[in-house]
Amino acid sequence: MGAVMTASKSEAAYQLVSERIVNGAYSPGYRLVLGTIADELGCSVVPVREAIRRLEAEGLVHFTRNVGATVAHVDSTLYLHTMQTLMIIEPAATALAADAMDAAWLAEARKLNDAMRQCLEDFDPVAFTRMNTEFHKLLYGQCPNPHILDLVQRGWRRLAAMRASSFTHIPSRAKASVEEHEALLELIANHATPAQIETAARKHRANTLNAYLASAGMPPSAI
Amino acid sequence: MGAVMTASKSEAAYQLVSERIVNGAYSPGYRLVLGTIADELGCSVVPVREAIRRLEAEGLVHFTRNVGATVAHVDSTLYLHTMQTLMIIEPAATALAADAMDAAWLAEARKLNDAMRQCLEDFDPVAFTRMNTEFHKLLYGQCPNPHILDLVQRGWRRLAAMRASSFTHIPSRAKASVEEHEALLELIANHATPAQIETAARKHRANTLNAYLASAGMPPSAI
DNA sequence: CGCACACTGATCGTATACGATTTGATGTAC
DNA sequence: GTACATCAAATCGTATACGATCAGTGTGCG
Image 1 (cartoon, protein in one colour):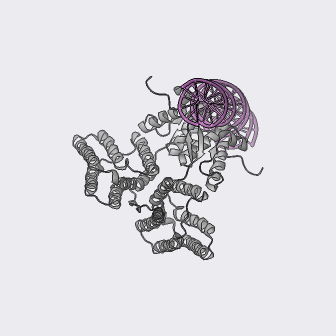
Image 2 (cartoon, chains in turn red, purple, brown, green; image 1 turned 30 degrees about the horizontal axis):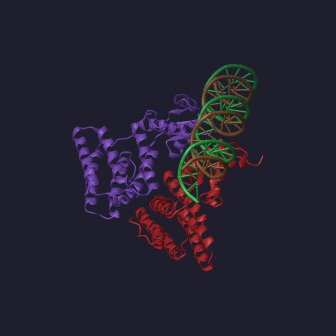
Image 3 (tube, chains in turn brown, red, green, blue; image 1 turned 120 degrees about the vertical axis):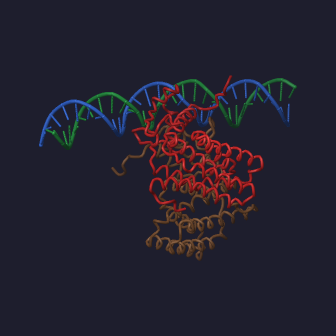
């Protein structure tokens, strides 16, 4: 046989719905009907229900008793809250991952950031966004604390779900972003302390958040 | 009627098991058998299963496919990771809640911290721990970002589950803790910036974490 | 004596079935 | 024309049932 049937149907349902939300195939507000998804997967509603509840815990879907589930609506508040959460956790994850950032890691990160710079010249925002996601994954991916790593990943998944619905994109930040990445890598190359790395990474995230806040006519983040 | 039957059975199962884990009635390693819990609640296994999976997502229980669920084992690593996560998130939540800390709030917090000081003199570690939990809840409880608030609460629930199994208690930190609380309240009373509040609150948490690390012969936290 | 293997009891995973609840529509009174 | 009561369809929530899987046990063979 090709693939080993290790995954449960509940897991399959989770993967399917999750991916579709992150991809944007299911837009915010989309009604998730248990029976429909169950039919599509060729299983009964019980595993689907479990998957939906898991996605609810992740904040990707909204669930109302006896009514059903919908893909979570994206509004400026939700976006703000997600960005704020990431602003706090991701830099910490990055700092905690400092030990794992060796020469090979640095080379890869620099290569990726250079590719992002190239995207700027090519006016390719789609590739830029994809690479930016990859770059940040490189930053926090080696975090040795699984709880923190999980929180960061969930945050990025939520962001992806929002971006897929083209909620927000701030082109004016792109150039500064690449430069801040560069500065951060420089810090890391010079063996800055984890605390310094965290500060710089948070600054980077705060700048992105504040650019959004400014565009929405709101005051900058307090922290 | 007394209570309105708004809660589903799944919710009831979640509440029951959750409370027992946090209380310590179910110790780490305790085997959670769906059928047994279902009988106890007078319902079938389906809602219980859903509750267990939710607790798994929270990190309170460990789940193995086709084998079953057990209350998550507490080891030094898990404790460390949980403390580290709280060290990062709770101070941020506190800083974000700064706006809501008015005179009335300050009075209540001071009263609680004074009561903690009294517990020190009375050598009452149980009341001290309870009040410490309350004090920190006061600190982060007004955080306007629901995601962050949720993360902090989950962290404290995990801590409670560990403490219930008397995993750790560091009496030598108690006195310093009260004094650090005092200093933090002083900062807040003097209208320090959220960033300053976050720094002080993180210092407080880092001290607690480092006291544990030192007692375990490990190096202090990098951030 | 130790190891491999089949067997068994317990438990999980999911399908099916049915009652409970909500929603939206229809009809009627005002 | 509007507001409200009533009803039907859709959907959810859970009970029950049964097949699937795993840990533990006993037996036979090397």
